[in-house]
Length: 151
Image (tube, rainbow, N blue to C red; front, side):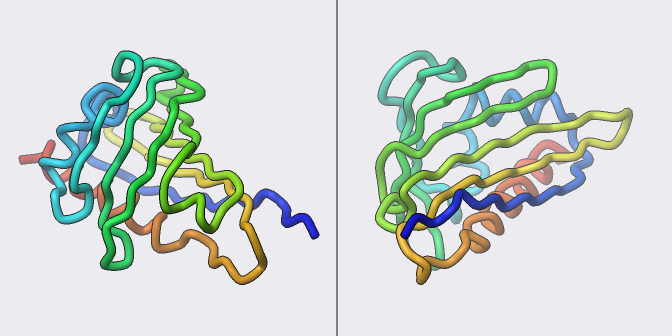
């Protein structure tokens, strides 16, 4: 039995500069672990140059009260759309999902900046939950980055 690829989408308006937010996610992931150390423990670069297609990094996250690891590769970057798409290639998530992609993009319209997080995933079986708590983590990290930049 094959389970279909599912999609979870969440949007959040931020008051800080959308370009700054995109650039931090792309070029300064190590700063994110300092801004929200209660959620992101560590970010390590394994291969390639930070913020480039094909670069590989691993994240140590606190998810549902446990430390988990996710190693990802950047598959797509669109500076015009402020979009980054990453594929999880190793780690705890792949115990539950056959495939897992995370896309983040920022729409800027004057003072309004809309951050959209998209998770595309294929469950290993029907008992695996949808990654709502992981999406919540992404939204909370977004809020922490916003608060940091508004200080």
